[in-house]
Image (cartoon, rainbow over all chains, first blue to last red; front, side):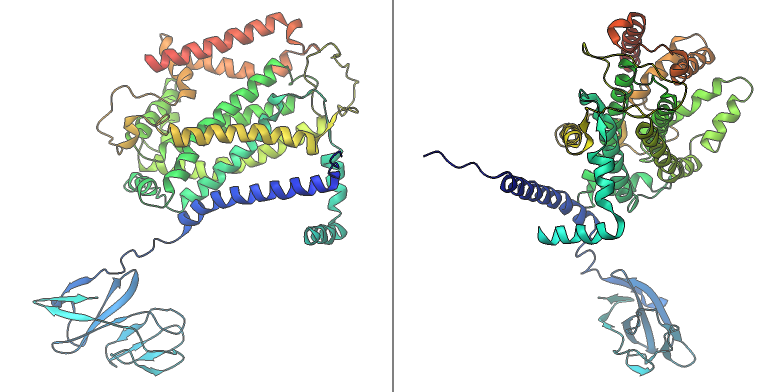
Amino acid sequence: MEPQATPPAQRRAFLLMFAGGLGGLLAMAAGWPLLRFLAPVAGAGEDQQVTLPRSTVKAGAAHFFQFRGKPAVVLQPKPGEYLALSAVCTHLGCVVQWQEGKGEFLCPCHGGRFAPNGAVLAGPPPRPLENLPVAIVGDQLRIG
Amino acid sequence: MAIVNQLVEFVDRRLGVREIFDKELRGYLLPRKVNAWYTLGAVLLTLFGLQILTGVLLLMYYVPHADQAFASVQRITNEVPYGWLFRMLHAVGANVIVIALLLHMLSVLFMASYKGRREFTWLTGFILFNLAMGLCLTGYLLPWSQLSFWATTVATEAPGAIPVVGDLAVEFLRGGATVGNQTLGRFFALHVVGMPLILLGLIGIHLFCVKRRGISPPPFGADYRAVELPDHFTYEKHPHGIPFFPNYVVKDGAVICFFLALLLGIVFFAPGLFFPESAFEPADPFVTPPGIKPEWYFLWAYQTLKIFPSELIGLGVQGAFMTLLALLPFLDRGPERRPAKRPIFVTVFCLSLLIFLAISIWGHYS
């Protein structure tokens, strides 16, 4: 008994599926390096600590700096007491400003107000500013 | 498959894409005897596309400033995930493009495909070739290595031999008396915006010329006949030819795969082929490394300038050769295209090719 020939339509469908599968595999092989190239560097600076001289933060004043790639602020509300916070407003990501006269933070985008410890005083921010650990090491402040 | 068919049906009802496909791809007939040399245009389109893609990716990390360019390229190569791959594809891809361009041009010359009122096709192709050389030259400086700095210094020094305006031309090219940050700025702008825009426009005009006039059949075989042209525009038809899709597309695909394999073969197995030691040292304007040479495709021009007693004569010879090449379809007007029936042309062609190779090898070892 002779084997039956596969109909052309079935062969064409098989070839299309085979070519499509091969193309998909090649696209994935090419896409992976592209994805990795474009992806942000994972874990960079996540454990990084920032050290600042205590003299950079005057009593009642605030000092802004970069912490793990984002704006942060350290302030001395009372002599010898230091607080470090993320300076990114929890509403829409603007950077807050320190109002030295009022002793509070103001977000210039939508008027959100925060206390020196980061608590929300008024406006649309849904959460307080993120607190960062700060330690006094001799005449230095270690944040993170 | 049903979803794909439905999607095609949806688009077709609105834009009539099936009609375009049938007319422009299935109904576009090419000479039955087209050979692998006819696929080099498609190979070049693919390679230019790859250059644009890898170039855009490199732009995300490259810093076009003399103080940071070298470090940013080192970062791309050594730190960014797969940065080495995209950088190598871009740098080696440029060399493969030059190889494909040369083969494309040589095959058109050998088969006299520029004949039959195809002057515009030839001229746009010739300008595209020179533009690609310009892209290579401007891109070569960007890594800001010793090699790129001094090769650019040598290359931009050449117009200085032109009487009266030579020094001005050199300063204009460099944006100052010497190669520096200002040169990097203008080469960067030309490399990533100016030249690619012109290149894309010219590729469009070149393809229009090819499509509008029709493909010239290979001038081989007993049944080949030179066509007498009427005194008005005609489209060169091939009524018994092969359809562009699927027959010719498969042939294109095969040669494209061959060139991609060549490119990847160099990237993975011979990555140092186009990178001498001085390509890994940052540019130092006070220290010229010994034996600095331009890229292999500029060696003929570099050596020509050294052969003649005066650089001006060397420049004149180069200019005359390139002008002759550009105007060839206007000078060589006979209808005969078969190489066997054009012994003088074929002799000059082979001799020129040998001289080009000999001068390039001489330039490499000089």
